[in-house]
Image: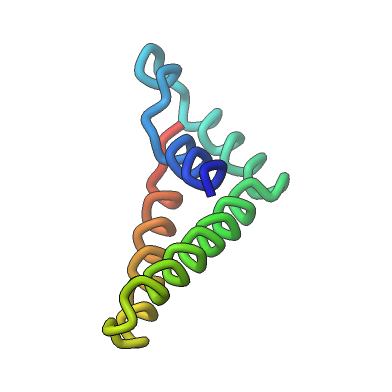
Length: 91
């Protein structure tokens, strides 16, 4: 669980490298293509799904009064935010 949280934070945290220097649009495009080809984007999505599943499982056990539809909504919203962040991510 801790590894997943660290990974998600690392993916979406601001990079020190990008704060100190400008990266050309061409290089950003190459980085994005590399991430897609190596499966980094898909791996991030898989890890976020795993994190959501673990979180909702823990919540279901701790809070049996929460309706099942609430967990579906949580999953949909987290996935939407993560997808938006990945699409808008600057390198």
